[in-house]
Length: 50
Image (cartoon, rainbow, N blue to C red; front, top):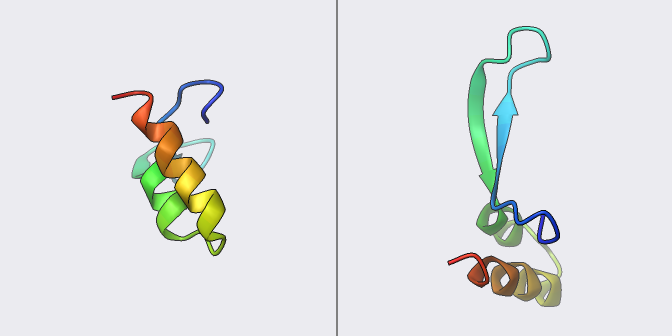
């Protein structure tokens, strides 16, 4: 995500209908990360886009 400068990923219900069901952000990934160092790196990478 950092290399492509992507902060959000759209979540679709399936490949056919493509109805939006949610959005996953870098912050969401960091919040659910069990590795504290990796979570900090994710948050730091998001700051570069502000």
